[in-house]
Image 1: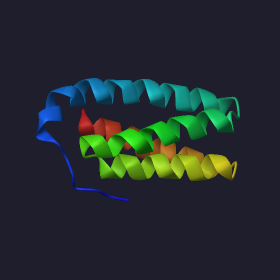
Image 2 (image 1 turned 30 degrees about the vertical axis):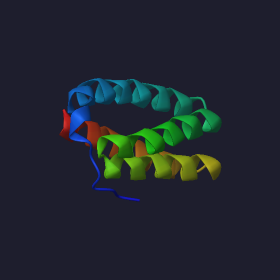
Image 3 (image 1 turned 180 degrees about the horizontal axis):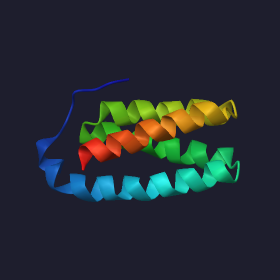
Image 4 (image 1 turned 120 degrees about the horizontal axis):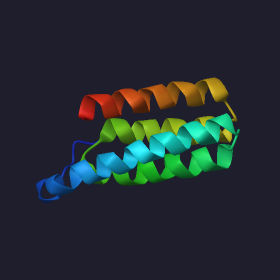
Length: 93
C-alpha cells in the first residue's frame, strides 16, 4: 500500500492534516475503550483514504491495520495499530 506520491503544492496543508489526525487518535482511544469497532473502522478508513494524498504511505498502512483489526474485533491488533499511529504522529511533529 505504500506510496511515494506527494503533491508539493499540498505541503502547507500538512500541519493542519496532522493536527486532525491527533484528534483522530483521541477518538480511536475512546472507541477502543468503549469497544466501538465500527467507530474504529470509520476512522481507519478515513486515514487510509486521505494519507496517500499527503504522501504518507505508512499512515495509510496504519489505516488498513485499523480497518482489518476492527473487522475482526481484534483488540490486541487495534492497540498495536494505535501505538503505530502514536509513533507516526510523534515522528511527524
